[in-house]
Image (cartoon, rainbow, N blue to C red; front, side, top):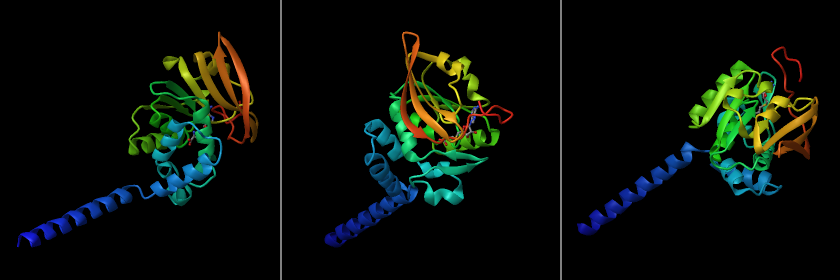
Length: 240
Ligand code: SAH
């Protein structure tokens, strides 16, 4: 009798842990795709910052793309998010996060919230993120995406990011995910001494990603890689 009871209890325990395991994987059916993305697209390239890799392993990118494109969320490509805009390729999100040298507690300004995914990656790394999006529908959608994924330490404002966010300046870092033809002065001004800004600059769809660092009040510039971002526009849709 006792043996039977123990056997029954063991069976019960096995069933419970099996179903918990299934519930776990069901809760994030994309975890395996995310692991693959990190191994192949980041590990195979020059992403070495452990905190970037951990954040990319954690943030549910599929929640930031339109439902009908969810199966492509972890592919090595940018994807359309509506209103002619795109969520950047995973590698570019990782590269920009690595270049910024994010550390917990840093205050970061993002121009171009888009889907909210880049902001989520920075928040996952422990930063406090302020993000500005010019297309109201995208800004509202990003707020929903971020709330659904549990990212509370992100403030999103709908507006033109060219002027930065003076009320919250200065920032330890600025990340710009739309491309102006020249670097906006207000964004340089809103960087702390020793601060870093990563920004694509150039003509439509043929830009250079550059890193600016502010040292002793002077801004130094270094090229990282050629990129293709959507243009930074004003409220009339004219490229800056
Ligand atoms: N970081 C985003 C990618 C956004 S694509 C993500 O992770 O999904 C670039 C975004 O910049 C677009 O949503 C576009 O509407 C926005 N944008 C363009 N010009 C802008 C401006 N002047 N101020 C704020 N956002 C701008």
